Length: 148
Image 1 (cartoon, rainbow, N blue to C red):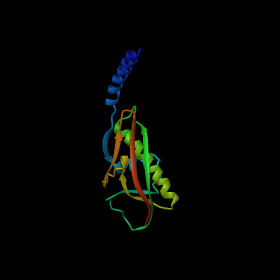
Image 2: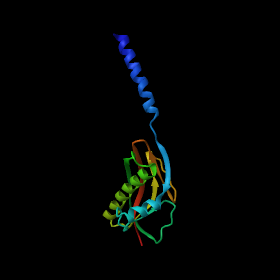
Image 3: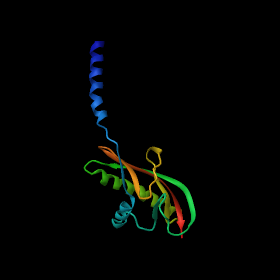
Image 4: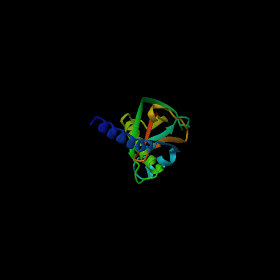
């Protein structure tokens, strides 16, 4: 009886290995401003809050900043290209940051960096996204600010 249980357990474990090895976590870097522009055109962002990646020039002077905020959003990746799923996940992050900025009376989010698995990736034009077979995710940090 014990041998049969061990054999069944061994077969079950062997079946799990291919499933685990098929897991996908593809790292992508896409253009940030393209997603912001599409989100405004589609009405998901209202345009009252501007978004600036770390290293990107901010027109005007930063008058006040607020505590750093983090947003980590996931979306389904099934039936979407990785780029479409990443676009959707970033839009969710931007909506969260827009709402946070407005709650502080701010008109911008500055010094934005990708923050996937708490590892910073700073680029003045691109954001980081990870896509799998089922889910895609974008995590970012940024600081609401009043820019005049």
